[in-house]
Image 1 (tube, rainbow, N blue to C red):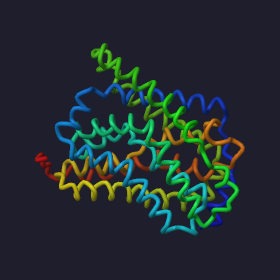
Image 2: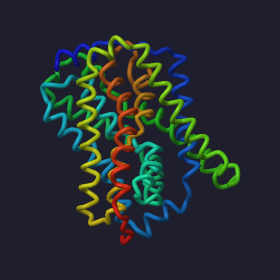
Image 3: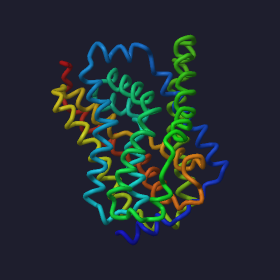
Length: 318
């Protein structure tokens, strides 16, 4: 296993500047679409019913990075630096916009889902760089490959990452919220097409990336499938478990689990391929493939678990 993943780590993926530009535009459209769903009432939900929202935020930004590191500990000497750092990056990203649809499909709590997406997306401006710096530094300090050259070069400047995340998230979010507030009719017309476009376009970009790096991907697909499957399953399970500890009802437990298991891996890919954060001469194959496959798998896993959960009777008590 380790030898196969090591080969992936040393792979320099083919991704042009034009591809990065298109990916940046895609993530901006995705975040603009997310912001069209955000209203001030979603933040008031935190004051009215703080417990479910608090559970969701803690699950995404504290519990998920922690359990990710525990999973890395389990595979301590069987996964490479690139794979481990890719897992940490994914766990540092906010929830994905498709989580609202999946939560509704699972008969979760749509209002809670949208509120969590709104709060997590805005919080990610600070929490994504902070979490990646904290857990990445801990892995560098304790990891079995602490002398690895790639690990030494993956030290990021959190300020530089913050600036990029701010541009990618804050600007389209502000524009989306202003559109929502001042142009409500346009917002209602635009929400669904933008959501569909963003999902299809992102999937298309992933397909192109995998096609351009088919030989590399084919060598280690089995191990990446296993790692992402375990990581995503642990994310969903930990979210559901924390919501249970908070004594939330079944509807809210499903929502918190889905919000924790659906990550904005598009943001992770944009950060990986941004030369201001990660020097592009580095072999970032491990990080990129883990993050990209997350973007595909979490939708498949989310739809699958939603099809099971939707058969359960909904309970609406707090």
